[in-house]
Image: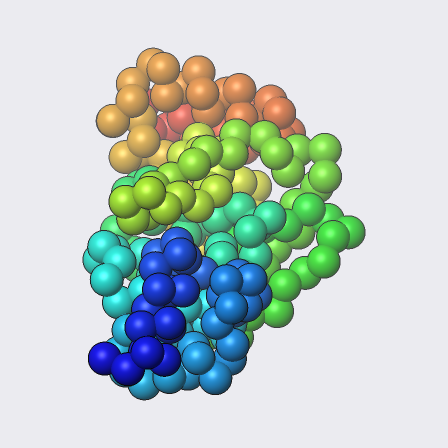
Length: 203
């Protein structure tokens, strides 16, 4: 290996498994260096300006890592959150994330991403850390909140998905799940839609 190649690998070793071009520049890796490492198969470009080391642990959540690395303030929501909690079988065709209303709305073309803006007052409610790869986590709304959010959506498709997720959630968590759902519904103003849904599922 040339001295130049050793320099690149030494600097690459200082970076986390998934990193941005900005972070790479901090350790002295230029855009040209990253291109050379990509061409050599040492890194993969997951999204514009987001890279993952080839020696990183494998994960089924590369799209989530890519999006959340580009938008670290965002929280995984909607179908993406329900899927992450294994409350639905559907594999979302786009990553769903939320940011506070009035804040910068990230524009991410790849992986396909849909950005929602949530009320500032409840944005931080029920956020959890979900490990999507060893040592790497993303912010995601809890299963209970994700179900309530889906129930409050205007589309019939969202409500149908929410009912399916609700059924699985209650089978898994029982009475504690009911309490968590009610707490989320009170916080988000969704009791009117949640109560009859729970009664229907438990009937």
